[in-house]
Image (cartoon, rainbow, N blue to C red; front, side):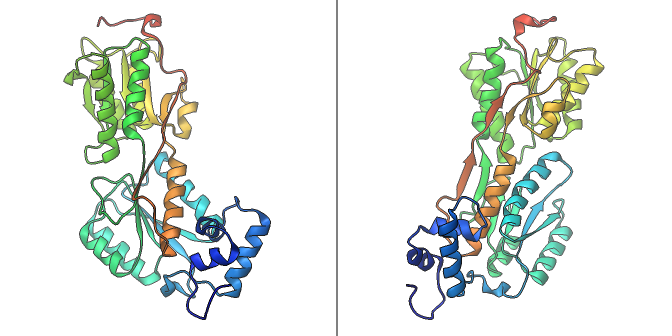
Length: 345
């Protein structure tokens, strides 16, 4: 039995039901992986003991979480939104999506809106939480999670990402295994941890293969198509052009496709290309893009589940979670021995 009239906790509900705290959490989150009998018992106990999350300041208001991007103009962002909304919809929680563009005025306006309507928690994407914002959210008792933090997040802020270093190494190892040694690399924004990790993975694979890292084959991009097109063009205009290019996002890889097409080069016959993300367009490109799949929807879903747990006052086991990346081989990479135009190495 749950004792007394004091506010009941999720642990007390779990004890009364004879189940674990995560099982009660799954019921509260609307998850389907709980047996019908156990779900019915837990829901009855929650009703009988009038269970309320710790953030009772939201009583009588619609439950919401905030999902905040610096930029929303990419299919990458939409995959994260899809993952978040899969969880929030099942839990009967609304999602407020905002875009702040790194602007102080936009951030100030967003904070003002948040104070007015309240929220169960905030998920920030590819950013750090500025100290004034972090302090204000802490004062409001609003939990925070960051997906792909830009730098070192505060120690009390959980972060979610993917195995970017191993993904970068796997992509490069794939090209090396096909016989490529002159491999171009197009990096993402320098201020993002995920971008730097992919670059480090590329370097590690190149060095492990005994191939000198050639700075002339390193280009800077910003994850968008145009930067891949421009950086790819610079690489392909070199007298000793690369036989393969690793673009550290699918959008940049598709930009490389266009740079190659305009120069009369065919993928993969004249140039192998590999990307990173496995966005929906990757399998519909021509040719279908070989890439590193990062589980974007799953990252969004995990962020939403983490926020919902924090909003109920639960403890998070680890502050940093990285989901596994995976090589997806399609038709944009080819053995160097099979290419029609080879560049001497």
